[in-house]
Length: 184
Image (tube, rainbow, N blue to C red):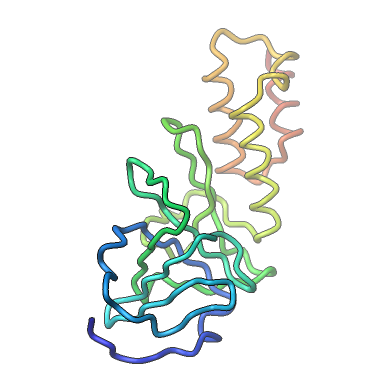
């Protein structure tokens, strides 16, 4: 392993990063440059950072997510890797996040606007607004009770129409449902 530098643990405060899960065999025999009180190990290379941990998501002042490999491993501790330029700034005030829906896996996640995949079409929101929309979309994906007032031939078509409005407009869920009911 090429040890280029040793960043301060504080250098990653207030960041968002989506680590990609990789095989733990990569770090076999390596010594971590940093070990957190919570038991996570950090390995720094010229290209980026490896993090070996059993907890992902909100970490102190940061949002670090792990994108799992397929098929998912059963190990409690997982190794993730991120390039240095994939750490993006995070705060509660700015509109930094957009929603990404995967209709095949029936999931929704948030992504940072500095992500190279951002196409500029999805509405940018604050962390709080993003969390609220994710909860609404997950309810639409997982439940059917919300649809009892609608006349529809295919629930999945109706579901996708509402979710797309939540992702690509600033309309509230109530506004979207109201417009759909009015147009029936």
